[in-house]
Amino acid sequence: MTGEPAAARWRLAVDAEQCIGSAACAGACARFRMTDDGRAEPVAEVVDAEEAVRDAAECCPVEAITVTDADTGAPVAP
Image (cartoon, rainbow, N blue to C red):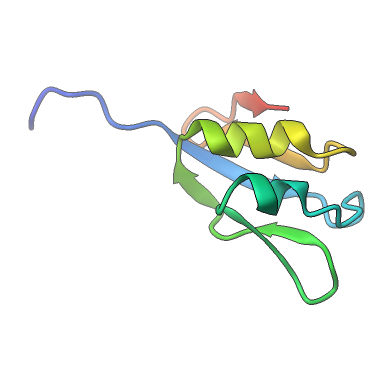
């Protein structure tokens, strides 16, 4: 045990019914990709916390992306 706090982890979700396929999230952050049907999805459900993930969620024009703390469930973005 190093005594250092664990790195923050975030849970990503995209509401596929709300997503309009603008691809703003995928353009802002490699943690998101576009599916064959033109909707966004996270590359992984839980990722290390990074500002680009928050930026991607906040640039979604319909707020279809939610980012929450993986441990507590507290909202991170939008």
